[in-house]
Length: 292
Image (cartoon, rainbow, N blue to C red; front, side):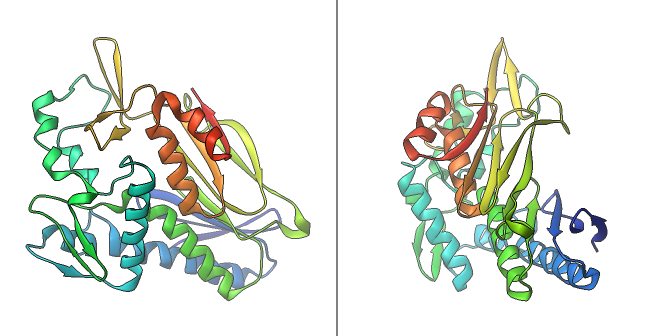
């Protein structure tokens, strides 16, 4: 159950979901409406987490990953799988929802435990969206393969929560799930929402402020999950095509886009371009901020 508190120009509804602090800012003078809208956001986050979390044995994703044969999925899941397929295609394989199995070799805990080339190579047969049999509504994974919506689930949840809240009331909204956020439009009176970018060096402190009036905003970072061996820093941003960390990614990339889902894809892809992240962002003509 979330908590409702009064803030400037409205209310803040705070709760936890998807292993993250979550909140909805609602510009209204009606506490009852704010409570209903906040509960709507919390319920949608819980629904999507229960359905798609790989950490839950009873989730649809876990059922697909365990299946020894094809699994039929509903239209919502089919749309997400189609989106994942499109992301894989346009990213030349950099975005791949089958790459989660690489965590069996990599543990980004700040230690010096870098896996051997043999350990990484042993997982290569289990990575690659092109190895998945997918034609809506049926998906089939090869034995040992997994899919993981970790790269798009939270962003999708933000967009979905905002849509459900907007269907209930026409008031200015900002929904933030663990740093991935979307606004319903401008604040009351047409003003912008001000969002802080967290420092990559000191948790809880702001590096700067961004003003947005529409769409979504996400940040992908490399500040706190890494390995360090013989003076070499290994990023937790893994290239699915090689199984190894990308070279020289930014410490942080923040992207604004029409939706949270789109922003999440683009900030992730920028990180996956490593030393070419800035060139990628420039080529896409994106509204973006980064730190090295």
